[in-house]
Image (cartoon, rainbow, N blue to C red):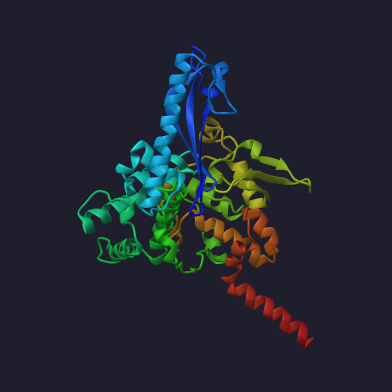
Length: 409
């Protein structure tokens, strides 16, 4: 059937994979609108041998069969009637919307909180917890915004528009910390909007929304320079010994990352089996980044090897089956600030700075080709690694000095 450029059809079929113990299979109606299909249970079952799959109806002349086929025709007529009603009211018609009208679900309109919960449930098995928890944080801010601006705990998706998104952005920007300063920088605000946009995209895909209110919004991230340690700052930490064992261990883990480029989660996942013999006959790390699943192979530099050897028989590492003894990321970063204070380093020291230090001070500044650095960092795009190359002014100065000497010579 085709009306006003809409293609529409209804057919019945058996769901054989859902056969019950008596051997009967449930009958489903398949609704097709413009190539998109949905299915609805008709709440009737039949034995496969009594079903005509070609005609989509029961076969035979028994009274029971005639009653079932009459019921199916009435069911089809009800779907067609709903479709014609939507046509006459000039409503946008999709397979999901027609199903909602047939089943009565259109009267319980989808809400923003239902969408966010649906998204987080769907992504639970896909995203790492570190990423998923950010969506829970965005949900928390959306709820705070609804409470403050709308005096409610939820809204219908039909109420989402550009103004809602614009007001939510201003709400995030206006939040203050206990010092009275903005609690969120521009990129933090953009990240929350980006996550909300992804959730709204899901609503559009599920046909809970006929249009995307984010289509008019352009997210504007500010490019910031990556923090890293200079060669002198790295030397200060390397040469400093700490009498407290946990601080010394944290320092060693940090230095290990400075000479391997591995993120915290990837260091914590290393096992003795992660150390392999490379094509050059030396020892390499062979692992994959938890964040992207990208395989990573890094030749081990002497300082990283020395740290592995130091903790080879450490009780915590042996008990956990890990290559090195590890702490929680939160504890590790708080201990690192103590390391920075004792070394006279004013930069806010986090474990991720070690990865940046490997990219800049340890490799690129010492002439390692950017393609090799990109491979060791597990980047999928060279442009990601080029961010590090931009911040090395000393390297630029050295390159130009060599060029000057060559030209003068």
